[in-house]
Image 1 (cartoon, rainbow, N blue to C red):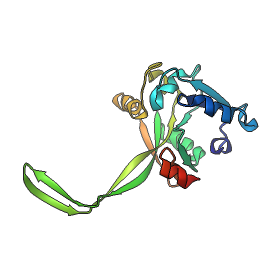
Image 2 (image 1 turned 135 degrees about the horizontal axis):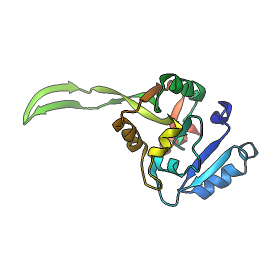
Image 3 (image 1 turned 90 degrees about the horizontal axis):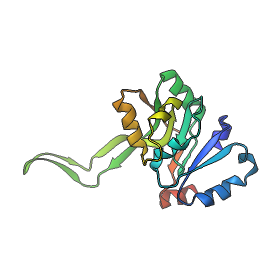
Image 4 (image 1 turned 180 degrees about the horizontal axis):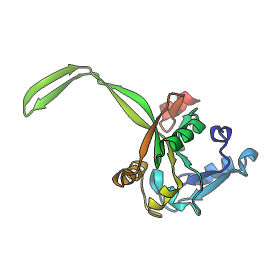
Length: 184
């Protein structure tokens, strides 16, 4: 629904695990019938491999996202940012912090060189939402398992522009049962 509200008028879902259930649940919703298409994986292709199954590459940037993401990301702003930055790929990122509940010890051999009590580490993590230029599809081997980090590594190895787009809006990965329950 968020994609539709952003003006997206063609959605392709890559299906594998429980794909029949997903197709049955979504395929019968009238507002989706002219918009959503399904691509079925014969074997598990990873988080990026289903992109190799596109019959014809689109002529506009692709929004690619994991199926277990619940977010209010402004897709239009993300696409506009991607175009303005002239990226081959743009990755939505968000800040995460990890609090270690113990003292962290740095070692040199058996000698302690530093102790930090209960440090908090801050990271940028992938939010599972990506924008890709259509020409990038030619870099994905057909019917070969490849996850999104592997695809992004290919782009980086070729010195293609991979940018980041900060996500400050509501975002939840509902692939974990606790987060799914929170989303309910």
